[in-house]
Each structure stands twice: as C-alpha cells, then as structure tokens.
Length: 254
Image (spheres, rainbow, N blue to C red):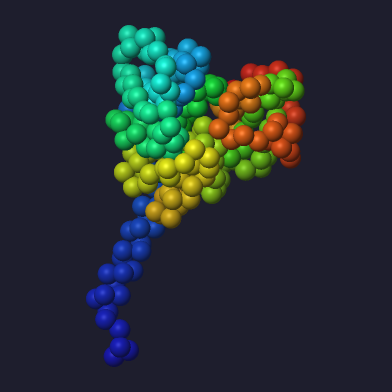
C-alpha cells in the first residue's frame, strides 16, 4: 500500500544484517593454526643473512618464506638448502609494487606477512599477528604507531604515538599483514614509492578493514647509506617523533 516492494525490502534488510554480523566477527577461529607465508622483496644481497635470521627466529611453526629477488646479481645459495622457501627472480627494473604482487600471488598461506629486508621482527611477531586476526574484525593489519632506529643519530624513536589498537587508514609497509582474502581482491600499484599507502587505500575501497596493532614487535631501520626506497632525510623522517632511548633498545620495541 505504501508503494514498497516488501519482499525486496525484507531481503535488503536481511542482507545488511548478515553483512554487519560478518564484519563484527574476527576472520580466524580461536583454535585456528593457519599456515603463514612470509614475503620479502630484496635487491640487497648483503641483507640475505638478516632475512633468513628474521624468518628462522619466528616461533610460529607452520610457516614458509617467499623471497623475491629484485637484482641481477644476488646469490641465493643460503636459502636454497632451507625447507619451505620459494625464490622468485625478477628484472632489476621491476617496481617494488610489482615484485610484491608476484610474492603475494606465490604465497600459499592463509596469512601473508610482509618483511622488509632490513627491518627487525620480534620472535613472536608472526604469532601475534595470527592472534590479532582471531580477536579483531579486520582483514589487514600492521603498525601505524611503531619504533624506528635511526643509525645516524644512534637512537630509537617512537612514531605516530596514539595510533595503535584501532581501525586506521594507513600502516607502515614493512609491517603489513593480510589475509589471503585480501590478496585475492587487491593488488599493489606498479610503483616503488607509496605502494603500501595505495595498497591500503585499495583494501578499504574493497570493504576490507585495517587494524593498527600495538607498536611492539617491529623495529624499522634507518641505516646510513641504506638505500631506502623512501628517500627522505633522517631529520624529516624523525619530525614529530619521540626519542625513547639510545641504541636499538630491544626491551622497548620487543
């Protein structure tokens, strides 16, 4: 009598209720023990030992490593002897975003963790990420507030204080952790600067939720002459941050 198609209205309301219910539920069951794929893109052979160490110390047992080598001369013999390792070689001119797409596509885990080849990850980093997906309604997680070591000043800073343990629109690229659902729906842009920012934006446009975890467990490295993709100076990088200690201060970031 009011001009509405009542069956259609009921269907739409039911659909909204079910969608809201799904969004309020953590994506992983409490008892889940998912396989985790760690994806790392590297064009610096000197970092290979560090990559292997960061992967090996992770206390999550069900894990594998996808190493995307983005350099012409990059010996990989140290990882060739390891179990559960996939090596992908790309042209040196290929963008970071394109390399990440290759690595994420090759990942077989239900959870995909991005490692940068020079950053530091605590032994419980992967396990903590898995636990977050069991308690928080999000398909993408990472660090918005985090610690960083600036080698030129030999101190640790805390960046973006107050932006942890909440839904956000941006996370540090080296801390990105996603569910396979996100990999199936979203790709990185074909660029080497800002690829992480645009990836998170695309995730949000796809209706995926992004959660910032606590700052501990991850230490971003700003090395002298480190060849960072994001080529800003240390002074600009540290602007607005809080100096928390000299040296790497493991007890703080872990």
